[in-house]
Length: 382
Ligand SMILES: [Mg+2]
Image 1 (cartoon, rainbow, N blue to C red):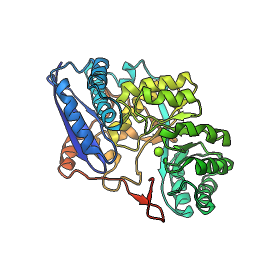
Image 2 (spheres, protein in one colour):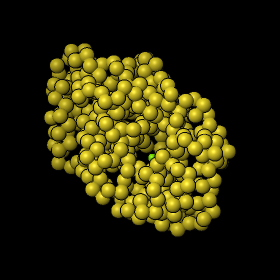
Image 3 (cartoon, rainbow, N blue to C red):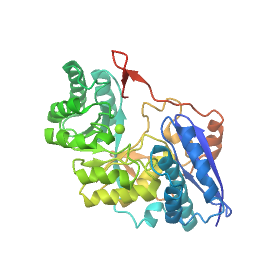
Image 4 (cartoon, rainbow, N blue to C red):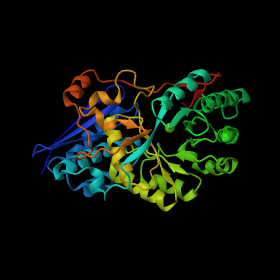
């Protein structure tokens, strides 16, 4: 079997899909994207395609190695996301060729379903609480919400209190035993993060996420010492080499690599194994589309330390198209009892509705994240 063509499709709300075709009529799908940089990642896929066309798609490990190491410069969000989508599509092809789900090719399943959490939006406590209650009514046993809005290096306690009120409203709405993750979104600097982590402790959160940016991972030590709440991090780390430093420090409890950013299934599986050796849990990041989620579930099936999965059904970014619009076998992501079953079909287990993908790709998107500013006019992390 030989690879004949790689085609990318920029589709709403903010995604990029990749189709890899072969001379035997089997094709695979991947989701190479960085939110807000979809066209750049598509261009990187196009550059990497020169090497792949004419090659056997089943030699995934060797292709990964050449595409990672072979360009001299390596790593970072764009390169590793392009490589991620290619890797997912190659696994999809291999699974389809062998008639097996990817998780079977990785060694088989340690679980047949995984807990999922739902994003809850809303800026006012009453809105967030209502959204959380609605998620629980739909069967979710865990939710995630944003923590503070923009925060200066040193900011007023009023902003901390606003965040606490929001979390308190959610905790009261869902009761004591629903998991709540609070995402600091890397928008908080160390002094405020430490304070916030301590103040949030009484709400018995499932985790706090990106309490500081990944590049400030040394600051996690002080934050970890200020709270017993588990600390999650990793959506902005892209390889084993990026994660190695964070794992070695030992102050992270949950890593959140994104299989559409961190080199695909091949690399994320290895990162997960490194974390398992450090007794650190896995919660794959996935605010993306159906192919990315399908790739996540194949990894979740196979990784013992996975305990929960992010998914974007109804997430606040999806204002134009949602997760299920692009798949023909929509039942594959049916949630029950707060969990989703691991798809058992060949490859990634989803059937992409290619006609609809092509139709939406004629419209495309120019999604960009918002640019926030502090009251003094200076830039604020979103
Ligand atoms: Mg996050």
